[in-house]
Length: 308
Length: 259
Image 1 (cartoon, one colour):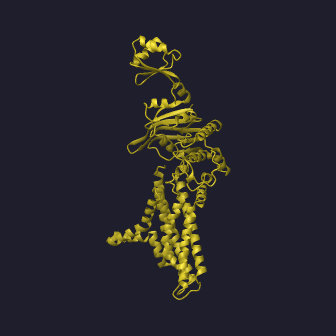
Image 2 (cartoon, helix red, strand yellow):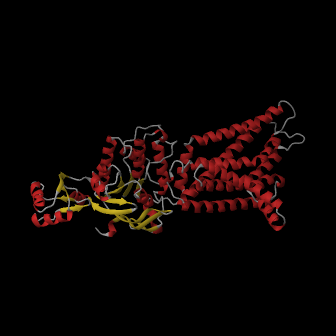
Image 3 (cartoon, chains in turn cyan, purple):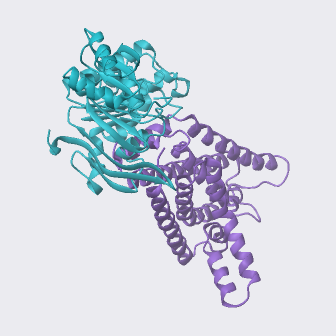
């Protein structure tokens, strides 16, 4: 795809809080039609980036483009977006319907039925006179999503949107996002710590660490990378790699830190690999067949950190 | 901007705080008016004109009401983290700021109209309209109150702009209230004392500056009833406070990180 299909693009985006760099020269592009999953540890810079995209925070360096507009023209494009950043926040003394009506009036969205449609979409039509302050976290999340969807946005920015939702709510939420993406061609930028859930909807991933983008990868490419493999732990990975190439004639393997090799060949006959290594004086310390998932891939990418 | 103001009015009409505050203010007014009625039943009667001119001693209440209406409209936007919903939709910060200021001012004017109508109506019902010796007649009383309101209105709007600035610049309504009280009530006293203590041109300058603080101007209005020059000065001072406070508030709000 070409750059003119970019919905959101960051070029060398930086944000410094004193000496701490929350974003450090971030380059990232969300293309039209993407469901872009942003993955990273706490403090990696995901929320900071989303807050910049929604105008809540200003960058200290670099440039941000939204629908091709940057600088002073960028703000006007935000009316084409819907956002839910961190915990949904509303006036505590208003009901769900009143809160949405307030924002409908404020944003000049025509038609009072818009509010009912948004509430129906997130299954929040039966809260009646209950005030927002009495809502459960799940109800707050649903209302936040309703607000984000009320103006039929071309681009949704969702930060941890499924926190607090019950399993049924998570499934509904997943269906809503899929439908929006497929039927309305809504582009979605979403971050979540529930990586299994993210992997069920994302079409593209960006892995962030310490304010930088470590890797950007499509869901298909990630699937290929996470496919089933033989994990070989040896005493000399370089020598083992050479043996696999010369003796088994394969280059379908990756050498990982800690003398580990992931071999995507010989899956139906692991003995061939172990035999070739043993014959050539490489000690095979462990061997297992495994398939990585998004979480394992991410942990591996960041060097086995304790929390995703 | 009209959409924004409409939305603010929609919200404040659904906020119990709007009605509770007005109810408390009217109850206090009723109590105040009933004191005259109670006094009349025991000794020398205070007529309508004599009672209503006492309002000119209560201009400071208007400055405090500005803070309350400011708080009602601002609705704890920092505490509730609701500003992000407005900014993320692409509403300009100038529209957010000015929309809230206009809504606050409209609410203050509605409060003022209701409170004045309630107090004058109550006095008209409970107190004799005929003037008696030593008291203003009803006509004189209304003229004095009318002039006081004409002077007070721009000064209260200036104080409203100050309240809006404080609420936007400072997280926490309590701290914002302290700043507002400091600007409207404490700062003039400090400037006056400094003016009296310092000799020469600086002292004189400070005393002149003190005379143009909203609270000072409103307090001095009763001594110059009917003076059109003073009335003009009040409107200029009010406009100055609106312009300066709005400029500072807008600048600060533009720089703020929204959470």
